[in-house]
Image 1: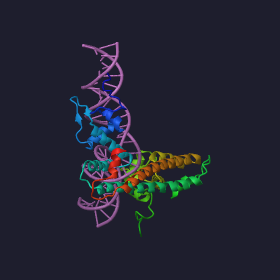
Image 2: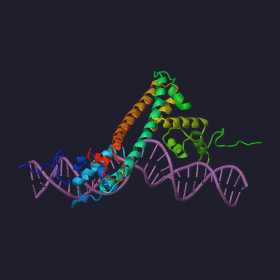
Image 3: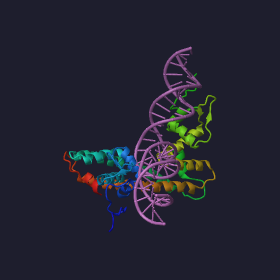
Image 4: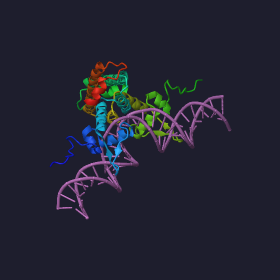
Length: 144
Length: 144
DNA sequence: CTTGACTCTCCCATCATGGCAAGGTTCAGA
DNA sequence: TCTGAACCTTGCCATGATGGGAGAGTCAAG
């Protein structure tokens, strides 16, 4: 008879230890502890010997956090999003406001980087890049 | 007779203290000390009482650093660039290589951020953003 | 001499993440 | 039952570029 398999990549039986929660969520164990210290997961239960025990709901929340990080939200924003997610009386406008602000931040940062890129590509274009010392890139950095 | 004016925004007479070097270069005094600890400025001379004294050449180098930071180069890259700038036997290819790598880095980061932006704008588009709780943004974060 | 502006060094904080060390726990196999 | 591997714990330090502040010393003008 096959006893419960404990396999990492298979259906886990909950609650799970931190390593398994990490594998299931794609978040490193280090970050799991960190998120806990940021109070993103509420009370994480422990075994008698102190091991953290993650429920299926915890892992769900961790996946939510992971996805939010992948979209570039800061931990402060994610804390807000998780709260809204867990609050059935939220207004979708609150969520949209956070997301819109993040998009605006991204837009600004992208534009700043594109401006750098334009300047640099202009300089690159003028630098012959051989073994001679003359270099319009350095000239620009030194004088602009 | 007007004695030397020491004016911040006028022609300074060198060497200058850190505050004046900061104003002339646009780099904060805090960062001047930091750059010194990174050995970007060589030996900064001191008065008997320990005040730093910046030469005109130092301020020129600081402007170079400032401009490089504004273009997004890391301090490690800037250290290389400053060395090349001060080395008359440099090959412009060395400079171009650094700049090209930086442009490639920027390209990658911009693309990553644009990908985030596309996803987010798609989600924003579907969220009505009113006082009802239904929210496709949260749905996506929770399930994707 | 006093006062205010300036400077000095040192320490701490950011933000999300990784690494390491020293020690305790769990479980499977011999 | 013992042992070793694999796991977990806490705690500290590091990143990169920057800012803030404390406590003390310096300088120049009044």
